[in-house]
Image (cartoon, rainbow, N blue to C red; front, side, top):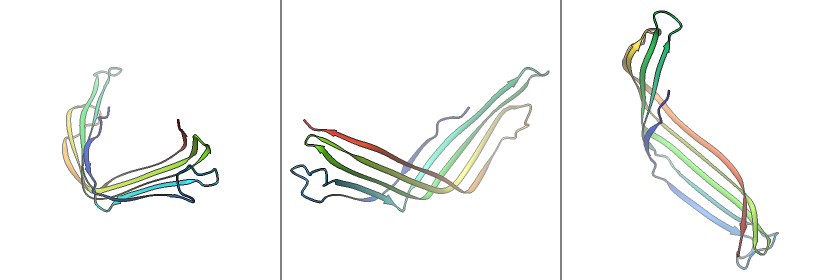
Length: 157
């Protein structure tokens, strides 16, 4: 059994975005005059306070006496330095006067470093003989990234 991660992340960032056409964007450009849109945001600082609980509850009645494991471990990461970058780009053009089509791509990267902490509570441990306790884990990090792509289809009325 695993709990849902709970936390907060604070990221101050700066960004820039742009849009370009070979010709003026109105009236609508032709098929050979695509429109480009892009956006980039990022920051060299990010902080977080993240927590996730993991629980184990097992009972094996196939052996005598019944073997039971019941523990809860909470992992906490209080990150004090991080980095963040996110970007999007889109290219589209008019296929007909009221139909626009194109492609887009987006991506993001976040990394936060800090000290992690494991806190273990043991309710019963017949098999693994787990001991309760707390331990700090220096040089812990959390990294998240994604890349996505898609098709743009716009209809005008």
